[in-house]
Length: 75
Image 1: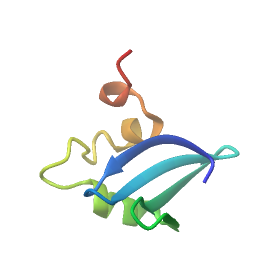
Image 2: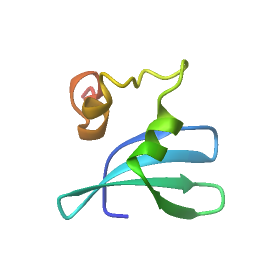
Image 3: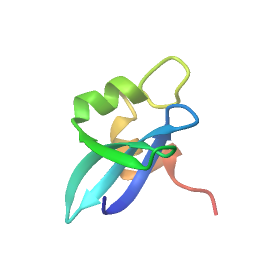
Image 4: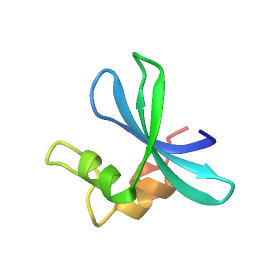
């Protein structure tokens, strides 16, 4: 996995990462407990990230993927 742009924790051991792989957007599901990662499709990432408990919506998906808007880290 290259540069992580943003991530969404699914539970204590799983997270979906948005990565920049030499200018290409890649989505990866990571199991932090077992130490494995697997590339998934953008549609799969949306299914995992967009839910009633999440601040991620279809309308702000692009902001989440680029870490902009409400997803910009506060310093």
